[in-house]
Amino acid sequence: MSNFDAIVIGGGINGLVAATVLARRGKSVCLFEQNDTLGGMAGLSDGPGTPALAHLVYNISPKVALEIGSDIDAWPFSAPALPTVALAESGRHVIVRDGRATFADGTPHPDADAFQALNERIARYGDILRAIAEAPPPGMPKHAGYGAALRAVRRLGRMGMGLRAMGKAETRRFMQVLLSNVYDFALDDLDEGPLAGLLAADAVRGAAAGPRSPGTVFNLIYRMGHGGHVRVPEGGVGAVLTHFATAARDAGCRMQTARAVARILTTDDCVTGVEIADGEIAHAPLVLASPGAGTTLSLTGTDHFDIETARRVRKIRARGTAAKINFELSRPFAPENALGPPGPARYVVAPSAAYVERAFNPSKYGAMSENPVIEAVPQSVSGGRDWLSCIVQYAPSDLAQGWTDAARARLLRHTTDTLTAVVPGFSEQVTGSQITTPDQIEARTGAPGGHWHQAEMSLDQVLSVRPANMIGHYAFGPKGLFLCGASTHPGGDIMGLSGCNAALCALGDPA
Image 1 (cartoon, helix red, strand yellow):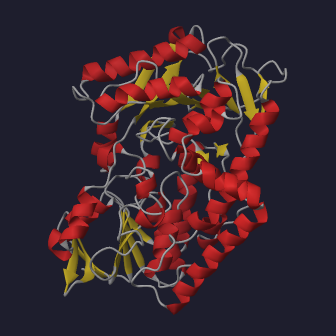
Image 2: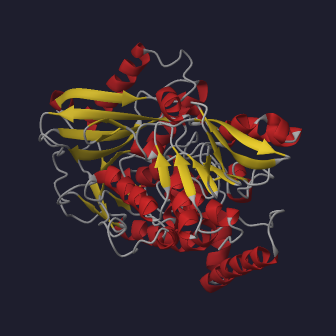
Image 3: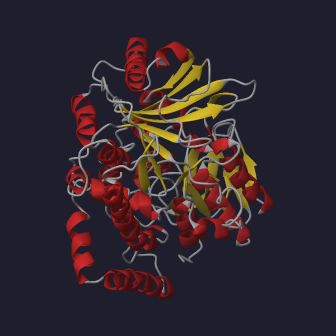
């Protein structure tokens, strides 16, 4: 038996951040991870240097960097932003750098000014939402003391001041578009084409929604509120996770891999520790769980939760729609007529907003898209091999006939054909592939529905109602138990804010 001040379940990005924050505040912390390696979903790999899931890093909050003792101006937070190439079947690919769009041959894009203005508007709106994302969700949780309540009021006040600073006209526009769909939002200012398709794809990535779905503008703004830039630091996502793991170790955290938690222990409705699958007991008055609410409820036992809470947990929607395919190539990925950006780039196949909507339609009925939306990033790994890492949408977790080997082969063929349509000759470059579908993501990580964020980022599952109403402030059931994973506010991407906020709340100091 071991005794700690706090135990963290799960060694993903949020678990690592939560453990580090607790340790840096003087707590003795032990982290248990069921897999052999740290990093959670983002740390999965199908081979040397080939990411099984995550392949890009969005802006990590300065708050997280501060709380884990890192310099926001240092690596990996300062890695240069990647340009994005919107691939088109016509061969007139569009390059976006820092919100400015040109054709790949350097000629001006007719929508360049409108696209830049729209990006700047989204960034301004994102600044308003970022203050909410970087703190516990709005509202007054039952466990909040006077100091926490006062800070919550101040945060809402800062948001109000931000809205006031935009002026009446812009504030009115912000309120009009916040809950609308990205299809209309994009086409109000842009002609239909790759730029509109790019905005649509970024707004729905990983979601069980299409561009015409209400609230997708909120998703786009929310992502921009976390920075909006995409990065691949030297060494890839794995190197970023190593950075976070090192910060946890330097803070004094004890981390044990290949140690699955079998039960969360309680006495008199208070958490007392955890039992590991091999029977070992670890005691602590605080337990922070990064798996989803459903998994945490099961580990604790439903008798520690009221009927309504258990019902709401069962109703949390987590329908994964994204698969991951890694292509091994005979030569570096370099689409013809898209040679503008030197070095690495993010390539997106979403030729129009209507294309993204059509790709979404089959998933409503449990079918995969024959012309999926694709985000691709070239990867070079040891041995001189070249890979193309692809996130493929829409591939629903609840595929009507199930994810058989034949279904995976069909998805691989659709993805190859789609890339070949915009990059002629691509299929001839492919020498091998690795595929991970939502059912495999769930099996390997425990994420319900294979959803990267453990719960959909829909309007009824964000902010103070994430992952569900009345359980949106991290504290969960017995005293001392907290949720700290991506199913909590503010959600997914490789940010660590959920873990950071949860740890501060567990300490009674929600900054």
